[in-house]
Image 1 (tube, rainbow, N blue to C red):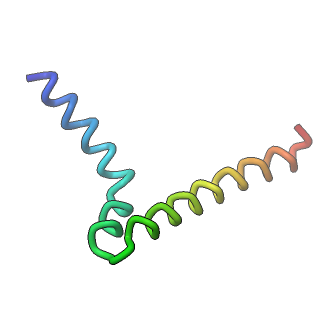
Image 2 (tube, rainbow, N blue to C red):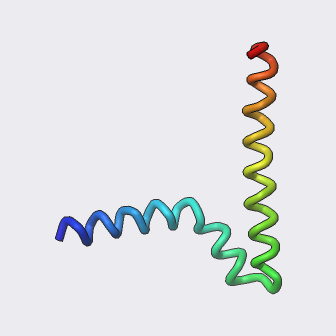
Image 3 (cartoon, helix red, strand yellow):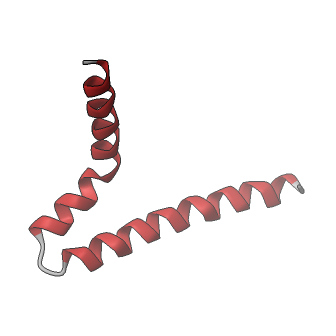
Length: 59
């Protein structure tokens, strides 16, 4: 039973992170490309912010 609960917990975490992208993919025509583009855009924005703060500190 503990294994089932652990698997459900992992599925819940994945669903939370990827849920909006999956909904876009399912509901919109061409949603796969749109979801991929949104995912890459948001990921790039986070990486850029991290680099910017590192440069500001002089490290």
